[in-house]
Image 1 (tube, rainbow, N blue to C red):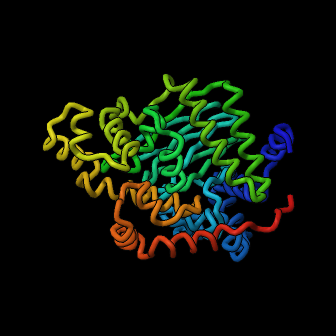
Image 2: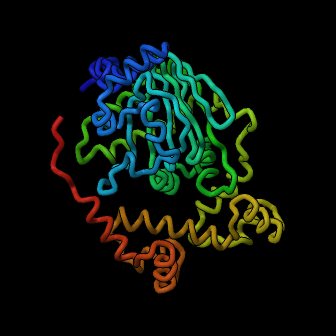
Image 3: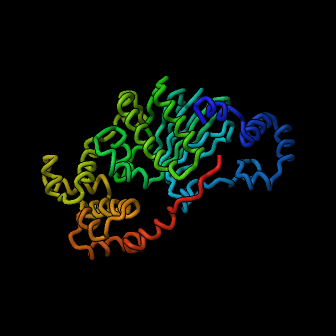
Amino acid sequence: MNRKMILNYLNEYNEHEQFYMNYHEAAKSPDTLKAFLDSVDKDYVLSQHILVFDLFPDQVPEEWSDDLFFDKNDSKSILVRKHYRYTPAFNHLNVFFEMKYVLRGTCSMTIGNDSITLSKGDLCMLSPATMHSVSVFDDSMVINILIRHSTLEDILFNVLRDQSIISAFFLDNIYAKKHLEYMIFHTNDDCDIRNLVLDMYVEEIRKDFYSSSILNSMLIILFAQLTRNHRKTVDFSPTVKKLPLGNTNLLSYIQNHYQGVTLSDVAREFSYDTAYCSRLIKSITGQSFSNLLRDIRLKRAEIMLQSTNMPISQISRTIGYENPEAFIRAFRKRTDMTPSQYRNKGNVEHQEPAPAEY
C-alpha cells in the first residue's frame, strides 16, 4: 500500500465516523437527538466501543491505560491511528505518550487549562497524566501516534543521548517531579514529516513481525527530523516559556554515565557544591541521587533483559553492579521477579506470531 492509497483509505468515512457524524448532526436539535438516540442499537454501540455520552455518560474512563490499546502479549509499543472525525470531545489522560499530527485542516484541543488550535503540519507531543480533549468536527484529518512509556526509555538509553529539545522533553517527563504537559512543532508544509507519518501509518496496517522494529526506527527518524528542521518553531504551554534545560542537562548527564557516576562527579561536571547538587536532584526528581541512579540502572537492566541474551552477571556489571547478588536483590525488590524470571516472561510474550494477512 503506497501513500496515495493510504490517503484514499484515510479519507473514507468508516462506520464509526459515519455514526459520529450523524450523532453530531442530530444533536443540533432536541427532537432530532431524541429520535437518533431512540434508534441506537445499545448493545452494538457498547460492543464496538462507540461513544454515546447521552446514553452512557460514564462510558469512557478518565485515565486511559496501556491495556486499552496495547496487547500485553504483543511486543508492539507504538500505535498509529486515525482520529475518528466527529468523535464527541471528552476529557481524559493517558499513561502513555501521545503525538497528534494534523495531516489536513485544523484540530481544536483543550490541554489542562489551555485551549489551542492545531493547523496543518502541526505536531503536538502530549505527556502522560495530562488532561486533554480533542475536537475534529469537519473533514480535517488528524493522526495519533501512541508510544508506550517503556519505549521512550529504551530510545533515550540507546539513541537520544544528546541534549536536543525532544530528549529534554522526555527526560523531564520520565524523571522530573514536575514536567511539561505538551509542546507543539509547527512543521507547516514539510513533506518529509508528512510522508514519514504516512509511512508509519502504512507500517501500522501491515502488522507483520517486523512492523514493531520498523515503527521504532521510524519514530527515531521523526524525532531527528523535527529536531533538525523545526526546533525553532516549538511552542510550549503559555505558563512555560522554555524547557528547563539546566535541569534536563543534569539528568541527561546522569543517564549517560549511569554505570559508574557518583554524586561528586555530577557536582564537579556542573560546578556545584556536592550538598547543593544533592538538594537540586531531590528538588527536580523527588528522589535522592542514589535512588535515582538505582532506578536508571534497573530500567536499563529491564531493557537489556528483554532485548539481549547477555548473561545476568554481565548485565549486572554493565549497569554498574559489581556484585550480581546485589543486582538481583534490587531487581526483585523493583519488579517482584528475579532477572531470569523477567527475561523468561518477556520471551513468552514476544514470540513471533503467524504472518498477518492484509
